[in-house]
Image 1 (spheres, chains in turn yellow, purple):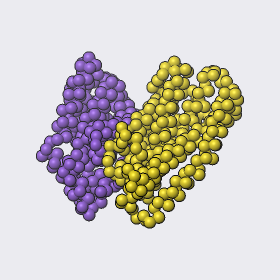
Image 2: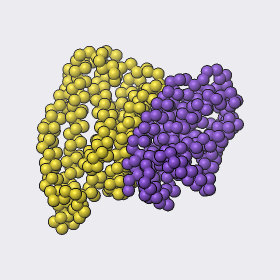
Image 3: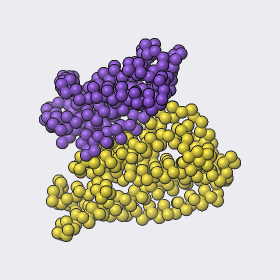
Image 4: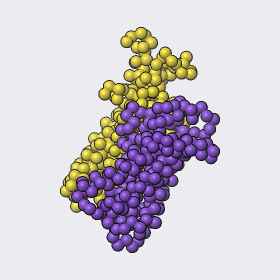
Length: 260
Length: 224
């Protein structure tokens, strides 16, 4: 279990085998580290401001929907979560492309963090979606709803990302294979939605794609929630990245200083 | 390029002919699964959606057996190293393996589909065969492309037998959707219409896209 939680980049930072450009390696590491740290404060403040604002708008500003009543408010949580999750998966794939092109392991770490965070957001999406389905259709799970089904398939695929990744020992190969997976899975996301959408009759009354005909206050609330959720995603990703960088740096330092 | 693929494919088929590791196992598994379905569903004959579902689940799981074995010999006996030493395009490996897997699937279906007609299917197989053949070919191309890619990904991992199917099944869900929906109107008693064009188009599009993706990323799986 401990090998699973260890960040993928960690083992590469062994000062005993420095890669090219090693003379200024340590200071460069510090610079990148402070760069993460610098962006973090405004990002965190923006998130802390945006999330309560979004929730306040959801509960006090957005009108109660005529058909579904109060339950419809979960829409402002569920749909932004789903959009951010899927975008996170696709971004993970794009970052993996950059990794394979540049061979800079930083990009693999970013891709890993994006997919890891998307998985967590994805679980939240499935839970909120299930609650919504129970409330409005009376069932926890509905097969006739293509977005829900495709989302589950995507989650099942991405659930194998970490088992695949941590079943490969060599760190360089681990990064390469994880990137290949991230690219394939990233391309799978839209295709799968297409196939599942085709396979079910479109019976869903509202949601995704129909946000254009939402009344203005609802559309505004939805947009603010989407922005808040994206900010939350970005902040959590930056925190995870910085934590991994810092832990790596500490290990490298303690190794050079001879601590064990 | 063509000569390399030819040589690799020849080696692949020769190894399979001499060891008989994949194809007999896959075929036997498929036939046994039909028997299991007979008892599990407690039905003597099936048709329509049910028949399409049983056929495709069986073919898919039988294909997984072949996918799991696809690169094992190369990994265990240094086939990868020998291939990487040769000054040839690495895509040749992908093409040869995918064609070999396609051939395995063809042989599997040559046995499994008649066995399905004999054991479980209610309508006679002869009338549906020409249409069903189109669906089988399109689905097989998709399974071969994704199967080869996933096999190459999984073979380097510790739990390769476990990860192969885990990775492949979600990726193949769209193929199953397309293939099952396209073949279910062919497997009813009064079979009147051919497969719906949109399912064939979905399958073809999926084959094309994943063929291109496999072609694009396969090189990165073979570097060390």
